[in-house]
Image (tube, rainbow, N blue to C red):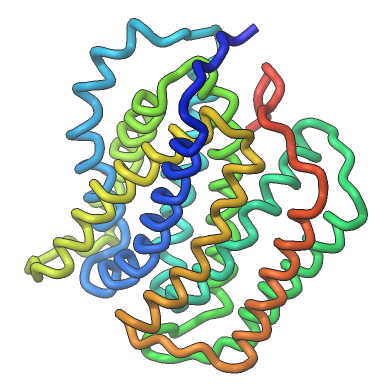
Length: 310
């Protein structure tokens, strides 16, 4: 049996998840700007390396005090493969091809994917209402992608939105596994492990023939990478891992619904992005699907001891 999670003031995990969601919403805009200046792999490596430099020395001192179990290393690596590794590969390239606003709306499907993961990995039954909501949200995503018109800011929105869907699938692997591990590992340790694996994963990409190393360092682009590394990779993940330690994964996933609303506002305010009437209607369909699922019974808080199967 995992050790009991100590009680904390009930509003602290909620506040941590709200902060994480707001930081992640800002990440869409910061990433969109950063990948317009720097190669996506340079941006992702930079943000992971910054977080690792801060966290790994702390985690090294914490390592002997974690409640390690046989097989945990495999789970930690699987969690990190989902996010940050595959997640950032898909998202960094998605934001080169679509707008931050559209990508943010697709992020609203994350709670639904978490519920679907419970069915696949736990054999849970879901209500017809949940299935209907999932289908409705996916229809909204398809409509949102089909209604996107190529532009300078979004040269291939259909492909970009498809990559963002894959990013959400990778994030789902991270969330359900992190919830399972959070009973025995501290949020700081989990975040540091992710940052370390992410740094090692993206370091070789700097030497790939297609990766363009920066020749200049515009201050705003550098500030975006610093925000992504310290504000998001460090701050948001630390807040999320803290929140998910004390709340069920399904409840934690519901806070992701804040992301698309904030991203659309920031995209309009900072990037001059415009949503067409069709895109507003498609986005409403996505959110209706998510809200429909929220009325269904919550997904389970953890995954079985064997963990997900890679």
